[in-house]
Image 1: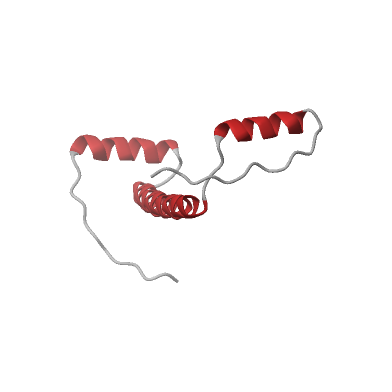
Image 2: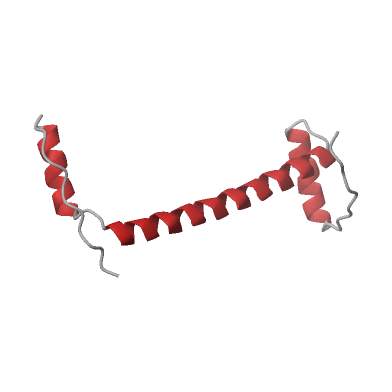
Length: 96
C-alpha cells in the first residue's frame, strides 16, 4: 500500500464546481479526479523537462559532430527515390 499524506486546498467556488462537474462526467469521485489531474500534470512536467534535456543533449552532439546541408539531404533522398544508392552526404560544421 502506498503511503499517503493529507493536504488541504482552498479552491475558488467556480473551480470546485467545474472539478465536480468534470469528475462526474468521467465517472470519478471529486477526490479521485483531483488526484488523477495532479498526477497527470506532474507527469507532463517531468516529460517536458526530460524532452528539454534530450533536446539540449542532441543539440550539443550536433554542434560537436556537425550536421547535414539541406541541399545535400534533398539530393540524397531524390536519388534514393529514383532507386539509386547514393553515398550519405558529408557532415558539415554547424555555424554557431
